[in-house]
Image (cartoon, rainbow, N blue to C red; front, side, top):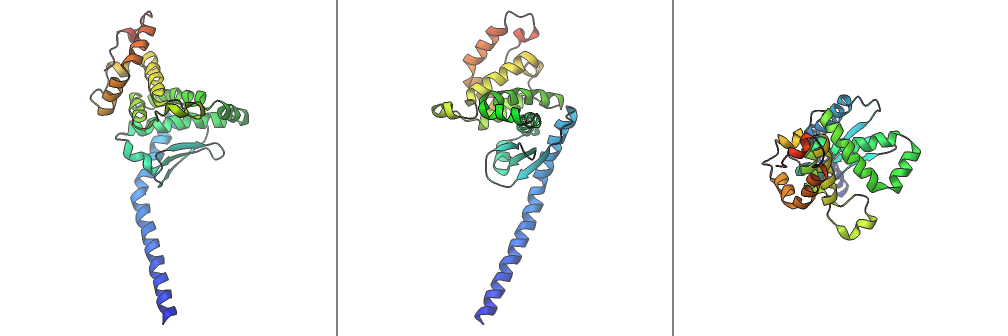
Length: 226
């Protein structure tokens, strides 16, 4: 009798597990499709002839990553609640695709990335902006996305793999200011809560950027960051 009950319990557990997996697959498939659709849109719009694949991983990590060996771009489940628009997800995917392009450059590029991680993170941020714009996404969304998730832990800056969050936001804003000023002049995210917070916390940095470009005869000098 005990053996029968034990077998019955195990069968029930197995069925429940299978049913749970089916439910999870049904629930999560839309996120996998979303990640793939945005990722391949960016690849195609930029004429990227290096193959990459995109995966949504149902783990609670607030992170995304690019893997050198498999050329796999991964977005973890824990990251998605932070984003409200496709443009924000496109910002993260564009950043990781930029890393993927460096990984495709070969072994020595990977070594350089390991030795100078902050340099290549900045490069990926800026390259990501170009990729976004070419795919029809608003690059201001990268400011919004990183304002939500980028760390500000100055105490570990020496050993960090990424620049401090406020530094990243400043050079991203400058890159958009210098190269894609129309997105700041006609900013659809002007009333966005997180962009307004960026404007509040970056006043000194933005003032320095405006001074830096004020001598140039360019429409940038007339733009007010709103």
